[in-house]
Image (cartoon, rainbow, N blue to C red; front, side):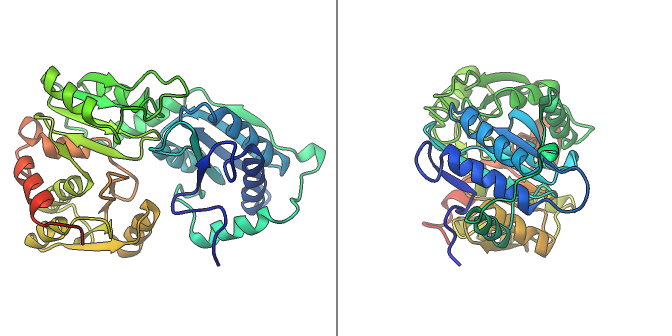
Length: 375
């Protein structure tokens, strides 16, 4: 059955044009809320967004949809997509929503849904929600309409979670890190997290105005990051996209390290330490053949899926692997909980923090140039 609204990563489009209208957002809220009304407990949905101007409109419409069918709403405000997934699980919510069009320009927006386990919904669940969208909603009785509230400490909760993924015995003292937040959802949490871990932080893209998300900055426009790393003498540069689920890295020379190279660095380091599970890395069909060859040299396999980070994660859960991601830099998953906050800097700047390192520049050459095309 072909899906009408959901694509490879939720619903996305230009705002105030179908399917990205307030009316459709209202219907998604009603349908998804109804689908996840299970049991006698008071049901709850967590909603986050990035910094787009249209986020206010879409958020309000979805709040109306969810509360109309009897589901309470917790509003996070601007937060990274991984934070919404984490807080959905942490707050025992029945559903999570991220309002974002990721790396797209401000005029676009999107809706991503997460189940109570914090994982993106399956194709079958999305089809079931679409079917409900075509039906008349079952509205709650007047006394059972949901309530909405905003929580003020969501940012701090996620900063602590991100810090907890970093090895306790390590600090970032002595490291100068440039982080470009794309004027998006991570404009507070990314610099704060790195600073609290001890790094000297040079923040870029941290002045969102509703219209400048991903505009000449972030992971889709890395030139400013590269220039700033070189000009400031930084050790590393990190570029995120609008909802902070995409990571691009620049080394101390300004050279870019893409998702394939990051996965190789992380996986080989974990393999040497005996921490890699499943004997493989999970990536999509877009990953470079060089990644496959580099892993093969270490006796590891590359498992490929169709394009889409949720398909990568589904395969990781099925096969027991704990490293995977997309060549574009989307969600280099570690330990199946999106632990991307600290691992790339540890591996790339190993001489500063640990003796076990991958040889970043050589590995970049191997993975990026050992083949003329993708697999």
